Length: 307
Image (tube, rainbow, N blue to C red; front, side, top):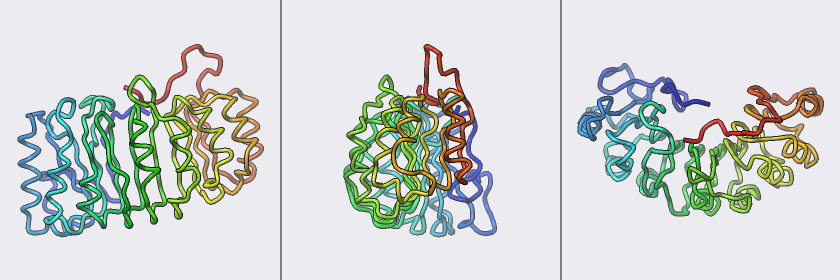
């Protein structure tokens, strides 16, 4: 998956650039995108964000997409600035931090910081997506409104995985972690995932993505025996280096026929194993994505998103 184009919708709403797309009939029914297309060190971004916050309808904004804040490759995301804006954005429910294409900044170069203030400033936030993981951290916490949490990275630090595992998200129904590769900071192990896979602090989780993983076979083996799987509707192990070893472990584990969808796209499976998955799961009604097959005997195996 090359991050080559900007998304056009977020949290179910069409994205509108601020200020170019303003005004609209109902500011609550669009996702407002704020960024600095000129890479001017943040001045344009700050002017646009300040302008949005000063609008008489700012209190109606439900969804915010933060693009380039000026120089994302050497300046950390403006977390404190967005947290401080909470009084002007009382209706904010969905936030995407770092929606940049690879031409604007490679995913593993996007600079971040401690995002704990976002959880604290927006207790009613239901959807949070963060792209990039360099310098990213947050403290384990309890957030009672969050329903969807996504970390997109070319290498996710084990500290982030453990912070998710140690947090209480009683309403979370979608969790997506792009684990990435060690060369870009992806140092999490399956042991770091164990509490997530146990599911005790995620009582409503029905959709789990452990994606883009260099250790995809190990993840698949851990998932095969994970208590949380029995209540999942969607399982996503795509974009990684999944081979016959991992797929065999997955199929040898607990039943998966209850799943609505199993996403394995971008894989290194042989044709006999693909056929077995289709026979055991696809024919049982599971929507299985086995697209983007790569050469299983190749000497160089890679995840979809790294640098």
